[in-house]
Image 1 (cartoon, rainbow, N blue to C red):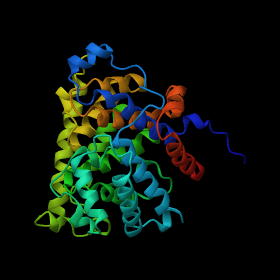
Image 2: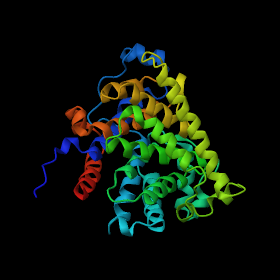
Image 3: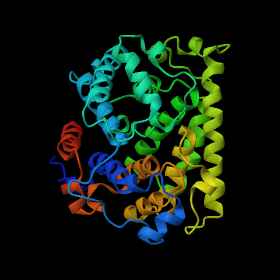
Image 4: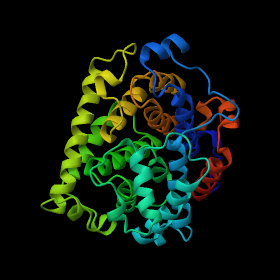
Amino acid sequence: METQPVDPGRLPVAGALYGSAFGDALAGPTEFMSVDLITARYGPDGPADLPGDPAQVTDDTQMALAVGEALLAACADGPGGFTPELFEQELRKTFVDWLYSPDNNRAPGNTCMRACRGLAEGYPWHRATIIESKGCGANMRVAPIALVPGLDGVQRSGAAQLQAGLTHGHPTGLAAAELTALAVCFLAVGCEPGELVPQLREYGRSQRRVYHHAWLGELWRRAGAASPEDFIEAGWVECDQALARVEDALAHADRSQDPCLATGQGWIAEEALATGLYCFLLYPDDPVAALRRAAVTSGDSDSIACLTGAFAGARHGLAAWPADWARRIEYRDRIQRLADAWEGWL
């Protein structure tokens, strides 16, 4: 029986990859601005168009591409050949390439820079990582992992946590990265927005004592935890508290208020997840409005908008975004290469 043709604009792979980059580019200029200054410059609804041609992104998209290209290399022989050891090797290569790239001039995070220097010097990743850091750099780059066809649940969970762990060793960074990837997955397969946060909380509770030994190795010992289970549980607990704040915020939603006041400024992983989700869920059927809301925030606006764009793109596909944005976005060729590869596997 012949399959029905698929509208490529509706495939969530491209929608989420481009959406993440669009959020990064739109909110990059507002990252270190107060809400009052943002609204004075752009109006209460925030910036309406990507700046420039090409529209420049920040280190958030650069590192997301590093994760995506490491995935592409590690899955060259199919998901069956995707292992923690191979993925770590490929991540190390792409992260070190990013570290030394002349384009790495977009105010990169100190945690990522320090950890990547350790990787470049050949340290085992458990030693290179910044063990106490749960900065948002762990989850603003994780969306590509959500979009690779054929990975099983353990592979996806382990890969999301491992890519976080190479730079951000705190358990909350690991758990928030996995939840970010899972949110993209849920939306890509049709989860209704109103069901998203409850499903994420239910999943998180089921994982509280699950430590992915094959992917994380002895990271828990580096942290000085009493056990692997105690180590990872602390991260899931903090993420559940952040998701509870999203539910509370949605129950009293105010589109005119800075989202950071309800769910956090997004400099740390669980707050970036929460505020990115909140911005998306304020406008679940209007991706551009969601990105503009994320850009008008008092915290880490580009990372928040990055996540918002990934969520909105996973739900609505590429066709929901302005066509001119895809033409103008920086690194379009690299984004499209990942989208083409994974859409070809569907």
